[in-house]
Length: 207
Length: 336
Image 1 (spheres, chains in turn orange, green):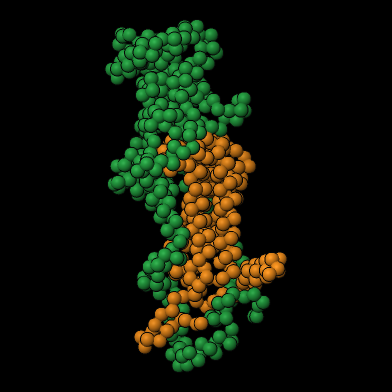
Image 2 (cartoon, each protein chain N blue to C red):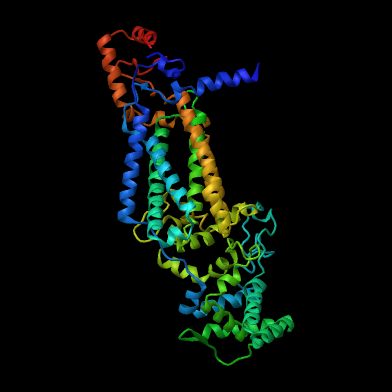
């Protein structure tokens, strides 16, 4: 088969505006739990914007100036919000069995985003430039060394930690989240499990 | 509205209006406003970093004991092993599986040279201190048995030493040049220059990003004392706690959990065991869709009934009303 034609067909279906920006959704989408995803994404936007401002200035700026400290607080609380909503999103999606009907990749990308999110936040905690950072640098070095990551990661090298935190890991995270979103929009949200009513008839199943 | 590439499920389920962009904007506004307000009211946790200068002022004995441990090789980093040196003291291994040793000595540290001899040579040279230069020469030229004797004598004496102000008072004894060297290290720390003398990995002094040796010097008693007081130690769920009442990185709870229970918290390879246990659990979470039993767990738990309760209720009502059963589905399928 013509590779170009296949890619074009896939892209025009999966990345069509009808799917990326739907103006309707299945009737079963009727619960506040569906907001956890968009709230996670919104928190990530605040994390990224505040992080960009902080990196545009300098690590000393966000520790010593009033405005810098405020941005550090914005970054801190948006990270808390990000993890809160992401955890809720993960738990709820688990209970919805949201990997069903061809959505396994969406699930895997979501879990990977969580993992990379944890690493990104950890390098951020090590970049705080305060006692908490110092302490967790010396504590975590034993974990990184013991796990065998010492070949390419030195938790005591602020240059490496900062580079990972502001460039490498966020890039990976943004790519994963974007891919996750495309996967969600490509397949739509998972349909409910069919259940039986008191007469034994299937309810909620349409196939 | 008919769409060219609508969701596959749109053919199976009734659809309703949805304004995704509006929902996104609203969500972003709510989160931004909330975060800005909380940040303004609560601020962010911060406890100033600890410096060798502070430690020298408050606990001069800690500086001398750490420096002596680095000089005589009894300190924990001196015998740590990879990635710092050839020691074995902190090499973790589970039944011979020890990835820590695979990469060799990636970040070499010779504690005697890096933490004591070189910084003191720099101090002697910078201050024109010929007595210190001579002490260093005497020490380096002495037979190792003599060095060990001086070190041991001083190590014993430091356990009985008294601190007057910020200076260490030693009982009389045969310490060779080592007592003077340790006192000089303490003076260097008090001046605030020791940290810089330790963090020497740099490109001609331009970038000083790597603070490895400084943190390795501080990591012993100096940091542990403060961490213990603020519930930050490993056995206190350390990383989960932040300053004062601020929430910490609570999402690391599954990780820190293993540091509280045997065999993870009793094994010498506890860090390695925890890392691989958590790694395996993470992989399991990732492959849930393909794990028999686990992938049916949400079906067995009733939570989905709560999440989709409106849908199930509406569907029951619709079926009751239409009493058409499967024909209703077929009809609906054609409409969508």
